[in-house]
Length: 478
Image (cartoon, rainbow, N blue to C red; front, side, top):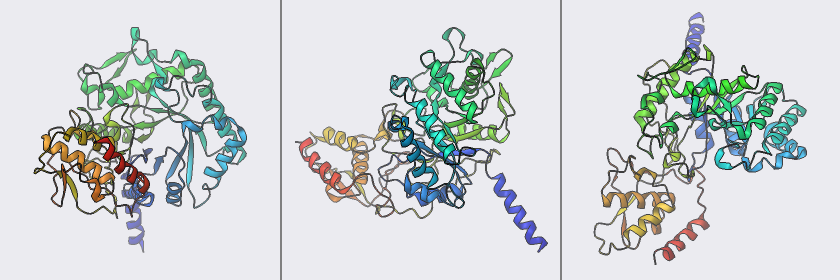
């Protein structure tokens, strides 16, 4: 019996060491063929991930999370913030999405995210006047429901809500953006009053994107030849510098010790020359090592950080307005299979993540360019159509499939459309330019997808839409 107790202790210690404390992930679902929620929850558990951040409060996801013990941040989308300015509506939202699930054996809800980056500069103030009233109402509704001590309302904010002046671009000069300074001061004072953390999304990758002069090494955690020295503090990476710019902004409004959690941080693996798996692996290994050591940042040294990686899975239906990389943030592929080795314990070993189990796929069929096609005059139009209604971001410059020849590019586009349409035979014609095959056309660098089966996943393309798209194809290519 003593030996049995020792074995149980050993197993529990092994599990504890398998995961950096405070590490969570973002679970987004903007995919044409999302993995079933139960498969995703098992994926989280198999990898020892005990915190997850959602972008809504989807009933199927919440049901799958029930009883898992995973801590959950649920969310109110930006387009519902105005409605939450009415307290009765906020109370109904809490009753439907919190009270309904938060009980012993249910969903372990820890935070409610009120909006998602509502003060982004690109929103031009659209949510400026509705965010704080919504935050206040939701927290008050949580309090009234008896959850106020354990569930806090917060607002995930992009790092663009603070900055340093161009004349003194160092962390110690950090201030909240001048156009929202009043709103931010009101919000952080409310967080301090309620015991909620400031939630910030930090993306070192974006420092590189569109700025060829940004020093590459400064985006990672393994050292740089050009550190930033600020009031005796040495900054060797942009994450620390960004985080401490926020700390300085909080100090400026008298709340320098307000708790901070990182709502999103990650590195994409495709869709840009700097979005590649080797860089993502380098970034995550450095980040996780830092988290495991509780190293903190120069202004908050030796401090525990709660961090949510962005994201868990690739999402092939996300908007690419910010860039093609938007569909490739996952540490796992669309089907829950790992992209690269990474050690979630932060111990420096390149351990492969555990892939999703019981994933059902469509048959091993692909749609490719027909080399016997005679009339190629409409090839470009057909490729354009295929990519309009599927994800061709991997074909872009610097991406994994950018080196395909003309026939390979057509094949990739046709196959992505074919898979998005659940391998419907009529979706692999393209005016005689395409044909079906059972031979995998993938190359060493470029994977030709087989989508998740519709019996295992609810596709975002319902049958009537499929028929409409097929009809549209006929008119589009006339």
